Every structure is written in structure tokens, then in C-alpha cells.
Picture 1 (cartoon, rainbow, N blue to C red):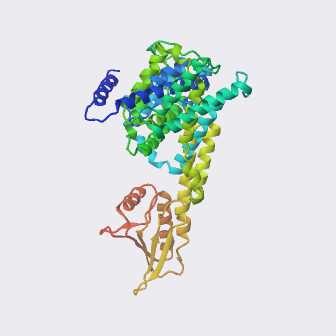
Picture 2 (picture 1 turned 120 degrees about the horizontal axis):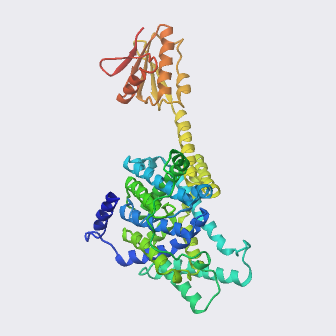
Picture 3 (picture 1 turned 120 degrees about the vertical axis):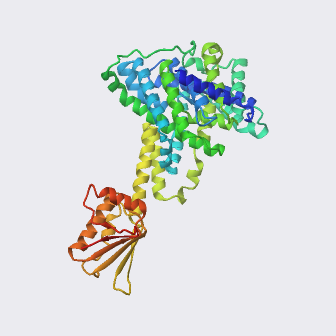
Length: 517
């Protein structure tokens, strides 16, 4: 705990380094706007997980504050999320909230380890179509989640006057958010929209649903609380799968959000630092009665679109959220849900990658497939980690298939009667069949050269293929020279010699490898 406090203090002093250019007005106002948008989201996600509203609000406070100070992406917002809620809902139902707190702490430890091991770089493996699909799916989820506001308590669609009032307030909110930046950017348009709609509802006493109609958000400071679970192997095995999934989902969603914010701001965040910060935040969230969470794309886009670029906005958002809970619940509960619904619909519109639709005819079919599948998995399964993994696997298989077809062999016979096979393309598990078909062992001359200047031996399947082709030539009394093997290929062959009988002897010059008979 002392180490964590030292890190927080270190980042605190960095935050107020006067060499850093910070627009304090923009940061504070944007943070206030984000705090207002966080309230209904945190409450809704807590309900999804089957927990009390305060567990979601406390998680939003802890996650937002810690990641804003320690995180690798200034301006990015973290809090309680639906991705985590859908994972822990069965744990909360079957074992209770104390096991949820313990699972969140363990998930934070996993994320902290991932940050220290610098696993954030694995996000390089996520292809751009998968990111498009993730973003589009998340935009659709954000939009669909707002449709609940157009239903009554019995689940039926609103009709008549209540529907017209709600639609009018939502459209007014959207109009202000769209139009105000064209006139002035002095104050975040989303904050102006919320305050305008709030003022209209109060002044004209308009009967419409408010935050307080969802649940009471009144509470105190998050209590420090060690999860009350048995310290046993059985407990560990119960929470382990949930913790692993929460850690994975949280890291994937956080690092993808970081990449998207990087593109918008044309700056570069630090993935490994963000992973470690997410871990610390989840550990503290579990110890301070929170349900855990990760980065939130919607709230991050609200913050960035308001012009916030520093850590201060995230800190203000989390602190103001706690102020709402402790001192301002009566006022915040009167905020119309129509204003927040309009805000989130605009976030959904801004989140969707419309360019992916405009360029769909220009994209390779495999990329379209990845994008559509990731979108569908995200929307219908609400499992962002699974969606991204599906995208990565399909992209990897398509890449392997394409490269498997690219291996070529240029054949020629020199003045000494030696036949040369110049190999082009990588030799790996997907291309070994085509590679073997290139050789005419029975009709080739006594001496053959296989030139790998434009090729690479990639894996064990390639080594085995090389071993088999040299064996075939050896059986008919012919000599094979393997030429221009790169240093990494030679090391791979040397290591494989301890596992399989590699039919290759290394030439002392390190330029040619031969199979002698």
C-alpha cells in the first residue's frame, strides 16, 4: 500500500509541473461533464452485475482516479464497465459480493503482472479491421443501451406525451452538442446541453425520468474493506477463472481504447504503463467496495471531444463523482435522463467508424469478414475480449493462407550441371506442402542447390520439411546444398537437431549448409 501511495504522490507532482501546458478550464469543465455521464452508467452496470449502485459508483471513482494519475494515456477515462459486469454477474449470484471483491483484487494483480512483463505490446497483433469491428460494435451497444430510456417500468415502449417530451429533450441535447462547437468552444457543448435541458425541466416542471428514478446514489466515502472470504485453495479456484477473464477483458478494452484515443489526439500513450495502472486501480477498487472495471471508450471520447488532453480532467471526473455521491446526490438525482441519453447517442454516433462503411468495397474480403464478425460478436455476445480474439485468429489464418500460396521456386541449371532452386516466400507449416511439390528428386542431377536468399525457415514444420527433402535426395544418392540460410534459420536448425534428426551438416564458412552422402 505504501508503494502505491508513493507512486500516486510522484504522479501528483508531475501533474502540476508548470512546464506542461494545461488548459485548466477545459480540463475542469470536461471532467465535470464526464462525471455527470458516469453516474447512470455506473449504476446501470452495477444492476447488470446484480450488485448495489454504490459498488458501481465506488468502482468508477477508484478506477477513474488511479488510472488518471498512474495511467499511460492522459485524458482517457476508466470506470465500471459492462464488459466486466457481464463476467462477474454469475459469481455475484452464486457466491455473493464478497467473492466479487476478491476476484477484482486478483484480476488487478494479474493486470499488474502483465504491465510489469510489458505485455501491452501484444496489442500490435490486433489488426485494424478488428479494431474497426470492436469500435463499431461498441458504438451499437452504446446506442442500443439508450433505448431502455424509451420504455416504461413494465418494459413497454412509451407512447403519447411522455414519448414526445423525451424525444424533444433528447433531440435538443443532440442539437446543442452538434451545433454549439460551430459557434464557440469556450465551454464543452455536452455540459451546456445537460445544463440547458436540466434548466428547462426544472423551470417548466416537465414530467420526465431523472437519474433518481433509476436508484439513489447517496452514500459516503468508499469504505476500506478486506474481502470477507475464506483464505483457502477452494476460494482461489472459485475466483480464478473470473479474475483471469476480468483481467483479460479489462486489458483488451483498455488498450484498444488507448489506441483509439491515440489516433484521435495524434499522440502516443504507453500501453504497459496503462496495464499496470489498471491493475493497481482494480486492486484498490476491490479493497474499497468496488466492482472493478477498465477504460471506457464512450466517456473517453466525451472527454477528448471536449478538448481535454491532460490527467486533470480524469481526476476532476472521479473526484466530482465522489462529491455527487457524498454531498450532491439530491441535486444529481434530478438530472433528466433525456439529457444523458442524448449525450450518449451522440457518443455512439461519434464512436462509429463511418469510414469503414464508405471504404467497404475497397477493402479485402478477409478484412470485411473480420470487421463484420467482430462487430457481431461484440453486439450479440457483449464479450469484447472474445470478439477481438476471434478477429485476431481469423486474421492470422488468412495471413497464413495467403503466405502459404506465395512460396515460389525459380529453377535453373548452371554450366556445371548443378540444378538451382531459388526459393521465394516464407517456409512454414502452411507452405510446406507447396514447397515439397517444387522438387523433382528422381530427375534432378546429382548435385542440387536450394537457395534461401529470398526465403526464411520459420517453424518446426519447415524444419521437418527440409529434413524430409534432404532424406529423399540422400536415398537416391544425390547431394543437396542449402545456401544463404540466415543466422536465425541456422539457430533454429541447430536447436531442432536435439529434437529431430535434421539431415543437414553446417558448413564451416556459415554460407552453405550441405547434406553429404
